[in-house]
Length: 219
Ligand code: URA
View 1 (tube, helix red, strand yellow):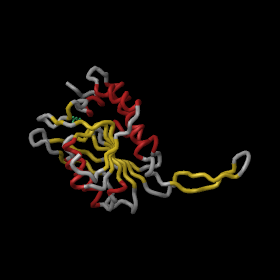
View 2 (tube, rainbow, N blue to C red; view 1 turned 180 degrees about the horizontal axis):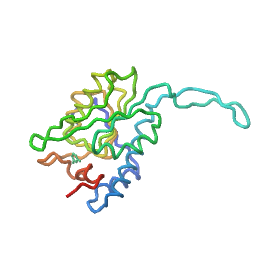
View 3 (cartoon, rainbow, N blue to C red; view 1 turned 60 degrees about the horizontal axis):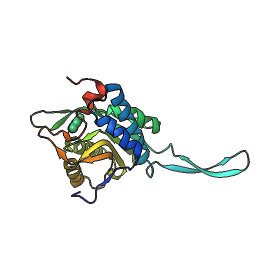
View 4 (spheres, helix red, strand yellow; view 1 turned 90 degrees about the vertical axis):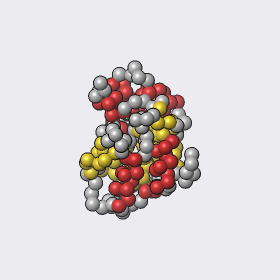
């Protein structure tokens, strides 16, 4: 990887490999594809939040004795940002783990000639609370253009980028290069890194159009 500061985690786990294989398979029908994306989102959220979720020390009384314990500190703000459209397919399972998180939708549409994405929906508040932890769900990091724009929007609303975790099903090397150059303190969790993009900026081997496959809008 060209930028050594950006941290990209590919959690080694047989369940991640299994569900990624299902998601990649062109013969996987839409409902199973969504299940695969959901399962991958669950495990990626689990991994990404391991040293990120704030905890609070408490004491509980077990049936036998008092005991030191830790619970999630619900006073600390957490946000989930699903990137529409395909990021919606990751939202449910991410939200199931981060049940107290606020959800701020961000929508991008790709210009098929320039291959650049433009934002058509931004539900962000003018300013995020200090120390808001943010999870961004975007299944496909291909060119990195959408993610850079997303991080710019978060950055200018006061989010500390080192508190952001990006969850992607697949990340391509060109996206990691571009994102790493601009946001080296970011951490990305992905099921696999694929090296190439084709001339339409699709990830190869990839899994096709994640939005179309999740929502049944393929031709
Ligand atoms: N978006 C997708 O859905 N698939 C790709 O391969 C690249 C971008």
